[in-house]
Length: 167
Image 1: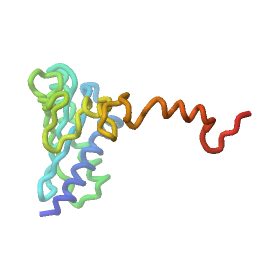
Image 2 (image 1 turned 30 degrees about the horizontal axis):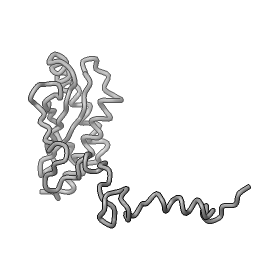
Image 3 (image 1 turned 180 degrees about the vertical axis):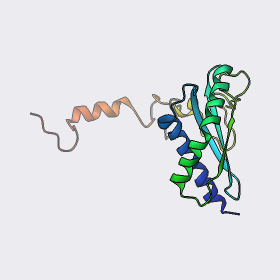
């Protein structure tokens, strides 16, 4: 067995090599709009499973699967060349659900203003205008931190900031 961190790094590298091969070197017209989503290696580094998604119809997905099956040998030899492993893992291509297929992707978003534990603040909460100032009073009431009179006093005094000299 090999270290899990090393297996993860090699799997990421294999996914990158496969994606580069599909983009640059494999010129099969049957290849559709394909995205390599993930690669996984077994603990002994002998078998790699490459997950991919094809954007398009079911005919385009099946044509892409056939193109990948015919190009597996070329891709495997390039993976072995670029990784430098003693034994090049065998490649298996597995399609993942297409984003266009109904009911295949489930987005779990708590909705505006709600949070789940460990999730970042919602967009609505991040860009909400201030409702209270540092003194605890609503903005615009007498005695809050940002009185309009304070700004007028600065203008009347002629204080325009450090280093300012009228021309």
